[in-house]
Each structure stands twice: as C-alpha cells, then as structure tokens.
Image 1 (cartoon, rainbow, N blue to C red):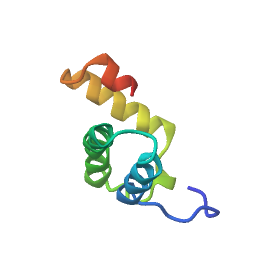
Image 2: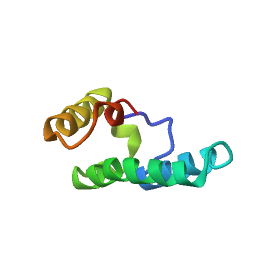
Image 3: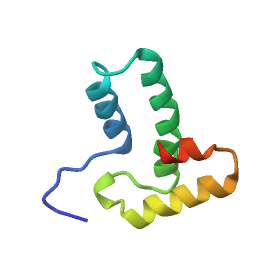
Image 4: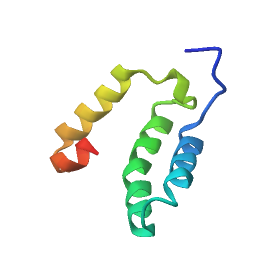
Length: 80
C-alpha cells in the first residue's frame, strides 16, 4: 500500500509485539497472546499477506466476521 513504510511480515510483527509487551505482562499472558495472534498470522500466510502494510481495515473486518461465524470463539476473545 504505502511505499513509505518498510515491509513488515506478520511473523515479525507478532514477535515485535510480544517483545514489547514482555516487560508488562506475565509469561502466561504472553503465551495466550502468542496463541491467539498465531491464528491471525496463519490466516495471513494462507491469504498471501506477507506485508502487513498491504492489509486494510476491510481485511481485518472480514477476518473477524469469519472467526465469529465459525462459532468457536467467545465474544470476549473477538474483542481482544
């Protein structure tokens, strides 16, 4: 999308996020975040999103709708 931003893969973004949060939250919560966000990273790979700069709000909305319709997540999980 934007040529001004360096490419950022979903895997790298997840690791940066977890590293950033590591001093703020417990290891157990970090593992929960890794697990929950891991499904999003997998979906990005399946849908050939290799650069998060190319991801739009519409893409994120579609992902949330699909996860909600699958019915395997609690509403609180979708909020987080």
